[in-house]
Image (cartoon, rainbow over all chains, first blue to last red; front, side, top):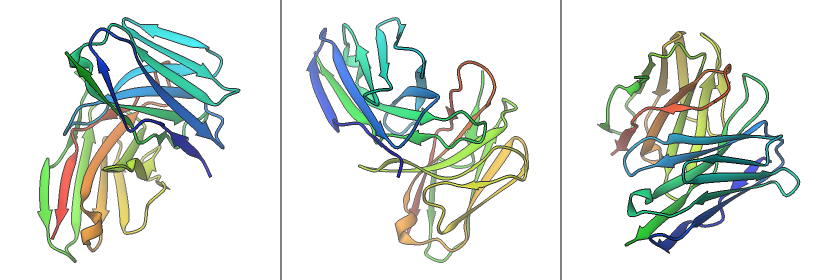
Length: 113
Length: 114
């Protein structure tokens, strides 16, 4: 069956360092991989999308890589700040307009001052 | 400002009650989704719809049904609520066209079944 795993439930790092979150998947050939941020008590908010034919995407302090051979995406936040503390979710989407989107269970990131 | 709204932020119901959760989006999106979110289990897809009157089962449809009579509205129905349906329920919508393919989420409904 299709499976998506974010292999850290929680990650604690020092302010200013780079946070790296991992997303692995099996039994899926996604057209897109997305990353979302979720704050407590709120719905997820879209951050970045990377397509299957793209290796890397950047947006301000965020960088996403996508390796379809390893079936893995890495999500980096550089120069991390306490305001980056949240849960980060990865999601896979297929080619069809009727595709089911699959979410990982999330990584809770805490940035300590 | 694009928006997905859900009818209630918090809801308390009794076992056996019929529960309606409403979701409305103002972005003219074709696709709409219902998820539940539980600690350690992440977001699990209950049902989704890619057009009016169309619905597809997600990963955990048992105990739920949905209705999509109008494009902007997607309702989740718990026919006979049970305590194991206590959860956070999230609605989302997206357009299958366009470059971003992002889902827009509502604020969530925290449902407690006693």
